[in-house]
Structure formats: C-alpha cells, structure tokens
Image (tube, rainbow, N blue to C red; front, side, top):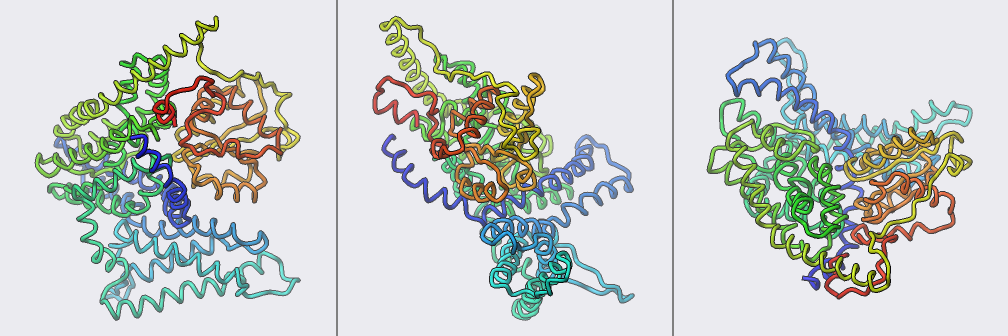
Length: 602
C-alpha cells in the first residue's frame, strides 16, 4: 500500500495544475457567489411544499407568492451564472494585463448576460404584438450554455485590451468617459459574435444552443446517474482529497450543472406527485457520499474520539468531532492524518462510493425520492439527508444503515492504525523514561504577543493588522478568524480577522495586510500570490498539522503571522510544502521510525 501511495504522490503536480486551471476556477468561484440565491430560493420551496407531507396546503395566493420568489431567483440562475463565471474569469485574465489596462469587470458581465439571452432564450410575440421571453432555459437547464458564454466573452475582451483594440479618446477627456468609450469595441464584438452565431446555429439545428446542449448530453446525464458514473464522480472527489488536493474543486465544476438540473427536475416530479429518481445532486454529495466531509469521515472521527486507545487519536477525534459534524473535516484530514495515509486509502475512497450506491438502491427499489431540496453544506449530514429527500421514513432507515456500514468499513483500518499509534506512543514514553524525561506532546513554545509586538507600521491604515484567512469553503478559515477576533477583544489587540472561501476573497483582499492560505488550497498558491502582489498584501502559506494547530491556538496563530511579517526576507517556501505533508514543521520527531510509520505520517 505504501508503494501505491508513493506512486499516487508523484501525480500531485499534474492534479494541482488541473485544480488551478482558470476555467475550473471560474466555474467554482462563480458559483460560490450564487450559493445565497440557491439556498435562499430553496427555503421558499421548503416552506411551500413541506407542509403538504402532513396534509396541509397553503391557499393558492400564498403558494403562488412563494413560487414567484423561487422562479424569480432560481428561475434566472443561468443568466446570473453567465455574468458571475465571466466575472471570475475576467479577474484571472486581468492578472496578465498591466494595471493601467484592465478589462472592466462590469462591462464583461453585462455583455455575457446579453450573449446568454441571445443563444439560450426564445422570444415570441403574443396576439397583442407584445414581445416575451420564454424562461425554460434561463434557470438550471441553461447552465452549460452559460458556462460557454462565461468563458468566451472575457477572452474576447482580453483579446481587445491586450492588443489595444479599443476606442482611444484624447488625453483631455476625463478618465471615466474615456473608459466607457474603451468598452464599446469589445462589447460590440462580444454581442455581435453571439448574435451571428445564434442566427446560423438556429438555422442549422432548429433550436437554441442551451436546448441543443441538453439534448446532446442527455445520455451523459443518464450515465452519470448510474452505478459506474456515481463511483467515478464521488470516488474521484475522495481520490483527489486523499492526495492532498481539494477534490470538489476539480470535480464539482464538471457536475454542477447536472446537480442543479437534477434537483429542479426532482422537485417538479415530486410536486406533481411522482417519484423523483435523479441521484446526482449537491445533497447526495454533502449528505451521503461525503457524510461528515470528503471520505465520509463522520464515523471515523467519532471512532477516534470514543474508541481509540491512542491518546493522540482520541484527542484529535474529540477536537474534530464538532467541526466534522457540520461538514468541516480538515481537522481530521490533517490531524490524524487521513490523507496520504496508506492505512486509510481503501476506506477513504471506497466508503463514499458504497454510500451513494446504497442511496441509489433506496431510490430505485424502495420508493425513496432523490434530493428535491438544496440545503447549506454545513447542515449535519443525517439531518440534511432526511430533509433533502422530503422527510421520508426510508430516509431515516437509510441514515442508520449508512452510519452502520461506514463503521463496518472503517473499523478494521481504524484498529490497525490505533494499534500502530499506541505502539509509537509506548516507544516514545519508554525512550523518554530511559533518558529521565517526561513524555509530553510536542508543542511549540507560545510567544505571548502584546499590542506592542504587532507591526502596525507596515499595515495599510497604521491602526489595525487586517488578516484574511482563506480556505476552500470558509469553514476552517472561519474558525481561525473567529479565534483571532475573540483573542483580540479579550486582550485589546489591534487586529481584525476575516474569513473567506477561495473565490469569494477578491473583494476583501485589497483592504487586508496579510492573507493566510489554508493547506487544502495549496494548488491555488500561485494564483493567490499574483493577487496579493497586486493588492500589496503579504501571503502566508501553511502546512497540514500546522494549520490545524493554528486554528486551535489563536495566540500561536498570531505569533506565527507576526513572525512572518517581521521577517519579510524569509521565503514563503518554508511553508510551501504540499498540504499533504501533514507533519508539522514544528513537530519534528527525533526518533527514527520504521519505513511503514514514515509512510503513514505523510
């Protein structure tokens, strides 16, 4: 198994490069901003439909009002996605252009929305001669077309600005007016290209681009919902995380459109009294395949906390239990560690696949619905599953079966690892006793940072040290930022910390003095470095156990940040080790371990 993991480790650079692809980033980052719309609209569906389960039906005017809010939000999701994906891609492309020749983000968003309407919406005129839009592909069905628009329009703008194909006004013209004229050529080019494309495409196919894409990819949608397709999707997420790359950042952009389309289709079937059978959905990912986080880590966390004989594993399990219960599983991934740990290779990848297969059996053969509602990813897994499929009895039974199966799969590997860690702890205790020392956990010496230790002279406002912590979904970064703010309040320190998911950090970054990058987003380090350099922000990277330790000890985290700021000449490469290197740089063992235990700690 060690040999397999070492071979997998060699593929890390390729997958990191794939994860950092600006088009995958654009889809992922674009959808981060759209999540409030998705969750907000889903709440109204819950209010409108859930009472029906117990025989209560809202009056028609109330039901129509609730559905109106849903239709005016989720119903135009693709229109907003075209703009948001284009916005995210434009920000990446702007990093390649001089500061004095930047592509205007707002103009790109407007052009993308117009281009999407041209290729995805059918106009019609009623008997009174009034023009209307058909809304069928403005919602989730038009997402794939919106991605294409969001990719092409920014590149057309980039081509124009890079080659200075813009209207140039005399120097005497105010800059805001000059900038408006500079947008005319790229805006006209973008809308004209899609307008002409739409004319010829409809002549050739008899339909719009969005509808044609759905027709062509229908077999793929069906195949992805099968046992093999599900294994590929959710096995890949776990595989990428196992080698230290945030799995959803690679897989989710490819399946997001299917996720949202399936949920909306399921909901309409459910509302019509039918059986919703589509499997692929965000809920399937959040609350079934990744129950407790990627790798289905909910049960192994509590096994560590309750059953482990190893003091280290028991402490890790207890510290990680609450975050993992809400889907934030980095503490257990890096703390145990689970990623790149040969002992857990099989259960980490196999358990999510078995979970989603069992879920499909319940949907296909036991009458349970697939996910009909979208819920926040931080909803505890069992609750999210029960609510997401419509509060069915089958869902309650499935929850208990999933937990039991996950325990059965993880248990032999848990026992093997627990025995190994107990042996290591006993060896360390024996060595310490032989040297007349007390065996203690390796910890860093905590430097008590006072207000006078904080280098306000290098901050932007000279008043506060502004810290931005960036992780994949805003979970662990929120834990660290909250801990820093709490300590600052208690000790009256001039610091302010904020947290953001990668992709939602752009608006906050320019006002910050330092950005701390969580190890799970290590693949985005180079992209973030370009952004921080542009905004004159110091970037600090972290390794696995080091980062988790910082989230638990705010004083150590502040000392770590201040030390990095005061040693500007130090290369960030000291923390640029892959996030899969979960051995904390401050926790180096002096004991020589067997080859097996070395492999396990990577």
